[in-house]
Every structure is written in structure tokens, then in C-alpha cells.
Length: 324
Image 1: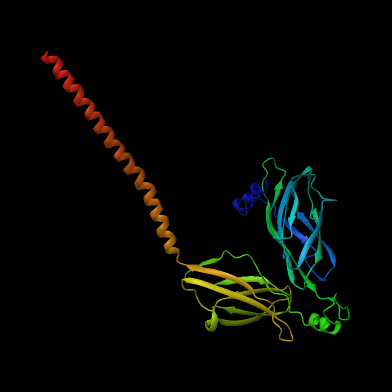
Image 2 (image 1 turned 180 degrees about the vertical axis):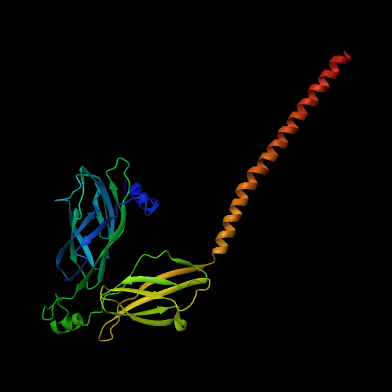
């Protein structure tokens, strides 16, 4: 069921349906301390159209937060072809459901997700895919947008001494705690390749109004670029010039006010010529076209030879009969 719905999301062109339905999460932003439990809700806005099915795939950063439970209480969905299923290893949540009675409204609750804040990191509850199906007898997918959320996990308040082992003094543990590195940035999904000559563009999220340092390249040849995230924590990296063929490595680190750097978020991008792909495609077409023709010609030749052979035998037999 999930694969069928996702195919509809990709294949239905925009502008086909008048309704502009959306999936969204609330709250859209939030700041939580390590160990805190908080909830987000996934809603459907049907844009005044009647709908009878919805589904979504939500991703999150499992290094920052983990799902405690998923509730369907109060949901507009009654039956679940795909029960809400999550993984704290991969950071994913998926579900698909139907309504017994068509729903119309701007805040149709689908599921409620309970998270626990784990580490001082940013995490976006990113709606990676989804569908909202109209109750029109055709199952028309009317979704046009998805709005995700961004949540920041903060250290405990100063004065809250962390749990320490017997081998660590309170003073040493507290100093190590307050000097904890800032959370690393999170790259948005990227295809992993770009055509030759185009600039490399990468987006992502981190804490709002935070300095991000980028290293683009390897070793001494790596170029350093810095920028500041906007009020929502979003950033965009754009290479200085069009890329040449090869493999490029991008690292991004958050820098706090004390100059302490986070771990590096890493992304590898391959720059390749579209010409190679075109040549391969043409070659495949040629092979796919020529080989069947050659096969038919050979088969036809063998068939003709076989018929000629049979004809020769029959002719010889006929000649012997006449001689008798």
C-alpha cells in the first residue's frame, strides 16, 4: 500500500486537481532539554475537498531524538493498511490509513508522535513522502505540499550536574559537560551527483542563527567557506564555480561563540558528464534494436537453408522415382 501511494505522489502532475491539500506537523519548531519528552502531531489539510485516505513517511535524526510511542487516538483514519511503524535506528516513521466516512477540514489529525530528547543536536521531523486521496471514486492524489518541523535539543540548565562515574570528579564532569561540542548540521537529502559544469548546491538545517563552516575538497586543497543559518536554522551551500568531473567531499561543522566546533556532517557528490549517460543510452538502444534484427536475419537464413536442403532431398527422390 505504501509503495502504491508513493508512486501516486511522484506520477500525478501538479495542476491536475483544483484542491491543494497538504500534510504538516505541529509544532513546527521547538527547543527541548536532554531527557525531555515532547509530542508532535501530523495533520492533513484537505483544502475543502473530501478525502478518505492518507499516508506519510517521516524521518528524523536518531542521534538527537527517539520515538517513545505513536498514538492514533483522535485520528480521522479508522483502518490501517500500514500500521504506524517506526525505527529509532534508521530514524523513520511510516503509516497509511483509510477513513470510514470522508473527511473535509484544515486540521485532520493523523497520528501523534511522542519523542524523547537524547543529545544536544538539531533534528527535523521531515515529511519525506506522503499522499492524500480524494473521496472521488478514483483515489485521486490531491496533495501539493508538505511542511516539516525543526527541533533543537539543548543541554540541561547550568547547575544541573550530570550523572558521573565513580572515577570522575564532579568538577571535572561539569566542566566537560558545559564544554560539550555544539550539535552538527544536518544535510537535506541530496541525489549524490550533479552534471559537469553546474554548481554544487546543498541545503540543510542546524540551530537558528548559527555559524556553519564548510570544507569543500580534500587536504590542503580544501576550500573553507562560512555562513550563518537563518532564523529557522536553514542554510544553503553553493560552490564558487561549475564543477569538473570527479568526486567531491563536503564537510560542514557548527561553530559556537567560544569557537568550539561540532563533529563534521559529511556528503560525497559525484560530478559526471551527462554525455556519458547519453552515449550509454544510445548504445543500449542500438544494441537493443540491432541484435533482434541480426537474430531474425540469422534465423531466417537458417530457415531458408533448411528449406533448400529439404527441397533438394525431395527433388533427388523425385528424380530417382522417375528413373525407375
